[in-house]
Structures are given as structure tokens and as C-alpha cells.
Amino acid sequence: MEDEQKTILNKIVDYQRVGMLCLFLSTFLYVGTFIPPYQAIEWKLEVLSGVSLLFLLSSFICCWRSAKLKKSFNKYVINLLDGTSPQVFI
View (cartoon, rainbow, N blue to C red):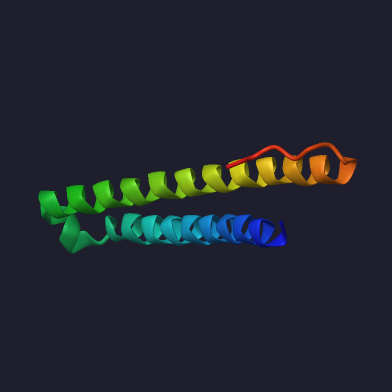
């Protein structure tokens, strides 16, 4: 039981870390669109903006998944402490 809980907590932390990393990369690439030499070449600007958007969406997905896992983990722990039969989550 404790191994399963540790695994879920590790997944939550991993999702949060990957989400923050994607958010950082998205911000870094978006700031790159303000550099004057890249504004002159249209396709480079589009690539930077598109990849920035993909990283931003990935960040939101990771944060959403982390929150969902945390919420179901908390329900699992509450059910475990109440003595009711814990339900399978994830």
C-alpha cells in the first residue's frame, strides 16, 4: 500500500516539474520572438511562436494532470483513514 502511495506522489511531483519546465521553455522561446533579427524572417517567427504555444499547452496539461492526481490521492487517503474501502484511482 505504501509503495503505491509513494509511486503516486512521485508522479504528482514529476508532473509538476515537467509542467514548470515546459512553462519556462515556452516563456524563453516567446521572448525569442522579440529579437529583431528573427522578426525580419517570417518563418522563424512562426516556428518560435508555434513551439512556444506547444510548450505552453504541455505545461497546462501537466499541471491539470498533477491536480487531478492530487485530488484523487487525497480522496484515497481520506477513505483509507475513515476505514471505508479505498477505491482504485488514477
